[in-house]
Amino acid sequence: MIIAQEIKLKAQRRYADYLKSLIIGETIFPLDIPGNKAYNKSSMDEFRCEIRDISKDSKEKKGFGYSIEYQTVKTKSLGSQDLPVRVFFECEEDFVRYIAKLDEVKVFKQNYKKIIQLIPKLKTWVELNPLKIIEHAANWDSLLKVCQYFQETPRPNLYIRELPILVHTKFIEQNKGILRTLLLELIPEYCDIKQTNFENCFNLKAHESQVRFRILDLQLSNQYLLGISDLAIPLSQFQSLTLPIKRVIIIENKLSFYIALTLPDMSNTIVIFGSGYKIAELKQVNWLNNVELFYWGDIDAQGFEILSQFRSYFSHAKSILMDKITFDLFFEQDSGTLSIINGENHLNNEEQYLYQLVKSNNWRLEQEKITVEHVNKVLHADVNI
Image 1 (tube, rainbow, N blue to C red):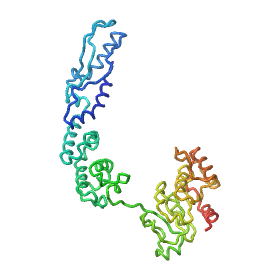
Image 2: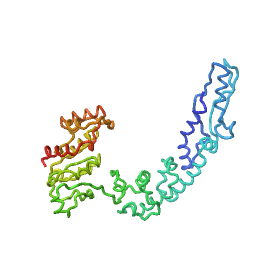
Image 3: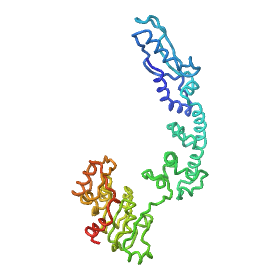
């Protein structure tokens, strides 16, 4: 026989249907709850226990909730008994009070009416997404202000915080997910749906990624940059950099990037802070195809996977300080992060061997564990400084 807990779960699953019925002006009541009404035939005690369970949360007991229809049936084992043949909610109040949504539904009714009144074009979206209205219940005044602005100005070409909308300064940044959904519904002809970046999708100025790098050639720094050697510039400016650079070293670890201050003077050379998988942004820098390119990452699964990714952009890139000798000298039994990446990669045989070794054992040798003396020794030998 269906139990009270099952009735509760099935009622909760009909909540979205109920909300949609409010929007389209229909009713789902009386609302029947399907379920097995067969009784336990083993004993009268068990039968009575089943009846007590199903009736404990009923409207008859609590004054609200589901109603139960009974039918007198003559049974073989228990004689004549009143058996439940139907479980249902008679009206909206019984249903909403039972699932404890009175306050939530009150706010929902206010919000969906407000949305349709202010932006009628969202009516279909509202009907299809009633739970989204619940999820963002406290934000609809501000969400609608943003939507109305973009309807009037679909190509703002401003930074988000420059938009003349009377909402909290961080509101749009904190609600990009729901705003993306709404704006794609409202102004699809002005949106670039292929863009995952909110700003690019909706004709806003994007805060451009910065490339952090150090110039290791003192003469070059003095000649072109007034002696400045540590810089962070927008990616677009880095793409068009015209310095006479012949060699680039990518360093993944920020501490190791700072240690680059101690590296020897290297002619026509810069060091770039790669910042993990953000290295993907460098594939847009075409002039990297024309320089010697070195990558230095942690000796762990992720380090080699980032190296492989980088080499898929620049096949001539070489790894440094990611070899078995370095690993054996400085490994201190540190654990890494498990990797689930499989398939082909862009590693050479030596790199592939060490990658599989650290991946299978979940080992990690971080860059900062390697001494400056060893770094300089390898640079002299492998980079020919």
